[in-house]
Length: 334
Image (cartoon, rainbow, N blue to C red):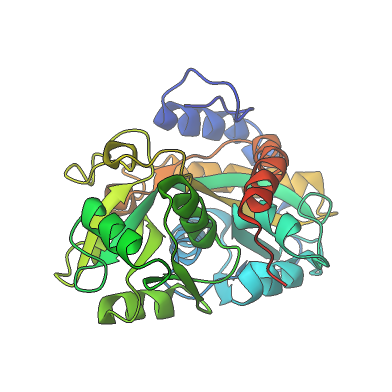
């Protein structure tokens, strides 16, 4: 639980945080509506990942609501590749007029430690708008190749070091870093198979071409309905209400694996403060609406909302935190 101005302090329930942020932003809404956004063309929201990945799902859901709120069409532009760097660079170079936005995950703070020549600055290149949602992580196994539970997977991995492989949507993604943390905490050797996006990784998990992968809770909830896959553990500190029968990794003897991701809405640096405030007001209003995203919440998406300053702080806090993980795992994306 967090306050609407900080990611390190908090005492309000999450729904109250979102509602309070929307109410505060709404005090200035009439003036902001009068100022509007530059031009009349559709607002493009760049998603640097494949369709169907959590950032894409979030961008489409929030974008639809913001379109109604702003009276402007919102178009989703998927530009996957290079662990999100391709689309993120495109957004960083866009005109700072509020007509091009970016939905990015925690990856924006990870990549600065993974790539030697990152084509943008995660802080200086963007004007944060609002944190949208958060998700936890899960460990999913192909039932035939990986086993039916965590203990069986660990036994197979220890019996044949390096023989089992695991998928990720790319080098340096949260999925990859989570498994590298898991390997060290569990004392096992696994072989990494990186893909260009989530869909290919999931397809091969279902087919049994890879034994395992870490994946966020929303797609895991859907995957758990397929008899070929077993969702065997969650990275959270306690069992999750939408996966009540899935134990935590700590229950299985593996602790210290982190895969809690946040997803933020960003504008290019230099976007006028009044435009950022207008976008923030719209995003918070959408997140706090009646029965907002009930289906997504049931799948494991947690609504956040809040101020631009709170998202800026999230990025600043995440950069050194994930730099330490990258150093520990010895990962490089180049």
